Length: 535
Ligand code: ADP
Image (cartoon, rainbow, N blue to C red; front, top):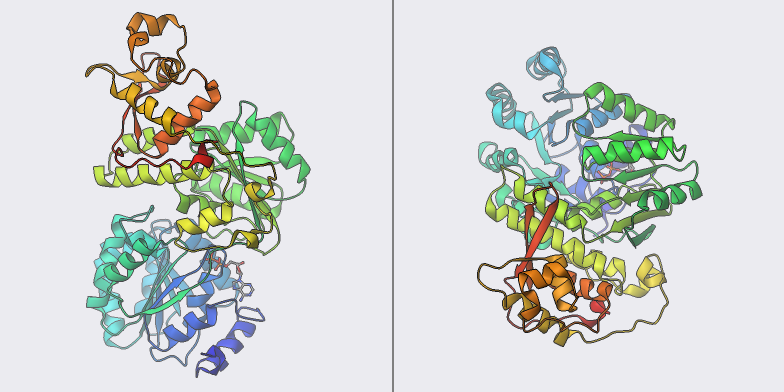
């Protein structure tokens, strides 16, 4: 269907030019706008940077839709919200917000605007927590509803509704009641993160079955995907990369705030680079200063935890993962912050299997998470490890497969390290070695537990005192992998861990180091190993 034939098109294109100062709609934007102006529910799946905001900001300032009045936008991150509010106000759009950042006076002003006799704002931004907890706000919305002054609800980052998603949030649960409380008010759900399971769950939870499905390819043709081994001198590697990209803006993601501070400091002190750290534990003033410095160009590199990035409007030329992302969704979103302007950008992930230990520990130690959720998060990490270890298949094919989309690797045009790598792919069948390794672990006594390093040594038949002391050299599979190099044997173990044929049980030893025991995992039957990932 030609979306420009819709009765809403004329006003939409005029407002696009006049209010947003843009020339054309991007893919799917008009479709989403038409749907919501026609009072239909819509599910919008668009990759990060695709232009989701316009899909609801533009209808909010249109007067010709079937439902009129206030557009309520539920958005989880206050930084993103404040950013958008400022942008909209600068365009002369009448917008108010409710969030925990604004203080009593700010809330009072917003409330007065929504209840007073003057002209009503077009958009209300609210955090899910506020919408959930503030009875006051709910009664205001109830009144607007009765007066037919409620145009639509918009659920940004809608994957947070689903417990299958990586960012599940309790406060999003209350959104399930919107359909019941405000029947007839269209709901628009937007996300950049959805596999089919998450998508169906979100639609189900929000009660918007039969909604318009507005989806597009997740391929980001202008991004170059690169996975590199993380060696001791990773910081040196990162610094040389940055020096090759002088004057360009980039984001480096680390797992902990300490690491962010350490990496930023080293880049500044040792390599004289314009780097600053950013993480959730910083004071609002410090965050603001850092963001401002970044926006102005005084700072070129932000070293951040995942707290940074959503909705930050700046042309990022590279995104570097200093350590493993938590999930493929996370990887896609974080890398997706590069090249939002459509120009070429690079995404580099530094991978070492050792980093999974940090992630596993983080997941294990988080108190609020249920066992089921922890298992899902572990699964998420395994997916990333699998991606990193697969150095054969086109990275795009792998990423898009994760999101449930097929992709022809020829379309990658050598824009990933695997497609670029022309070395002959030698594959080797490792099934026999893998079986011995599993049997070796299985053969341990009931009370015996061995660490990964011990397992490696026993497998390769190393003549080491600790192994002899423990009597491991009498294991029937001692030395079964003697022909493999240490590196090769380690990859085999890693791959078996990824496949859940082996499992790790993490512990902290007496000197405070994180270590882990290997055990036989859950995945035992029909073990098929992809030979090339073991090559
Ligand atoms: P998302 O929320 O999907 O990640 P945004 O809504 O933040 O993406 O938009 C990303 C960038 O694209 C913003 O800088 C925005 O101004 C720009 N943009 C959105 N729609 C258009 C358009 N139709 N034409 C040009 N630029 C656009």
